[in-house]
Figure 1 (tube, one colour):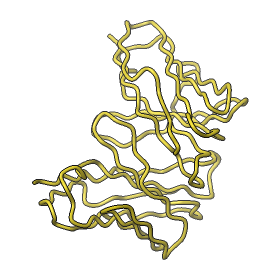
Figure 2 (cartoon, chains in turn brown, green; figure 1 turned 60 degrees about the horizontal axis):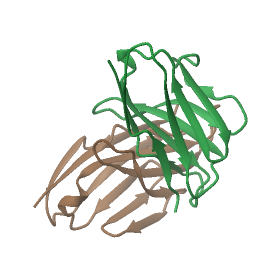
Figure 3 (cartoon, chains in turn red, blue; figure 1 turned 180 degrees about the vertical axis):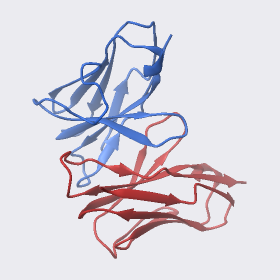
Figure 4 (cartoon, chains in turn yellow, brown; figure 1 turned 30 degrees about the horizontal axis):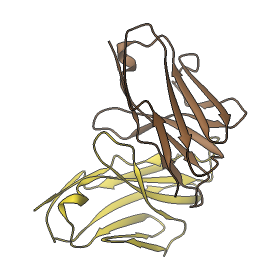
Length: 113
Length: 116
């Protein structure tokens, strides 16, 4: 069974204070690892898809990296508008539901001005 | 882009009535659509997976007669909550695959259902 664990559960940063969110996973054959951002009362917003170990993706202040066991979401010089819940999910090659995602519990990021 | 819309965004209904939620992929054809439920301060729980023109696949513990899913076209899926009860009150979110990034699900904005 695929599993995803995110840490920390909550992270408070000062504006400009860089940090990283962790996503540890176990999966039977990785089709993709996904990062989403979710604001309260809204659906998840797609950030990145990573397909294989060593891959990196960047977008503005965010950078996602992937190894065979974990992924990191690095946030450089965050701003208050980066405050949200960040969700990590994996899709494996096993199972009967094609395309099914396994989500972590999320990291609640709060950036103070 | 890869935009997914949901309608309505909020709905309040009386116990015993049925509610239909629409999910549309606006700028791509969705090979597969998914329906999730999210409780406060929890992650997303997959309810069912649907492919255009075929029956939906429901996750264990999800009543298929309670939550009817129709995937009539490559851009539209509907979820009907039949004979809704207060315990069905929740945040329902759909997603669609087939957009510009391979294997990626794009999520709708969600529908808040309150059953009185």
